[in-house]
Image (cartoon, rainbow, N blue to C red; front, top):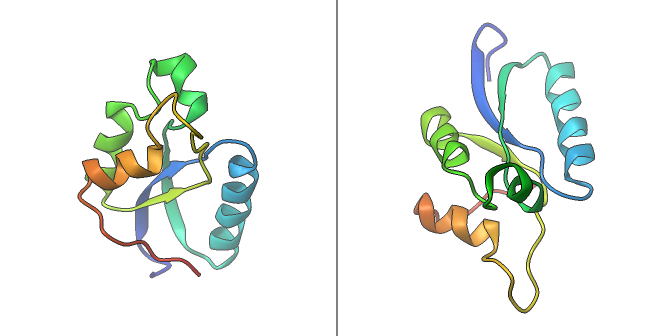
Length: 101
């Protein structure tokens, strides 16, 4: 990534430790000199109170528009309750892989 370009990236802070992890990742990118305009959106357990769903349409629209997202860990349901947000993202965006360090 070039220092002279402002990158537009969707940020899903996540649940639990997610906001702490994504905050640290943002600091690393800033220290590397990468200029990013973060569009912070909701997903996961925290989104339910605000939007009534774990994966709001606004979140998907942001990812589609920016074409890149940084996502913190999200609550994964055990035995039911709601569909995994990770599965919802993969289905909605037709994803088949992810990149991990």
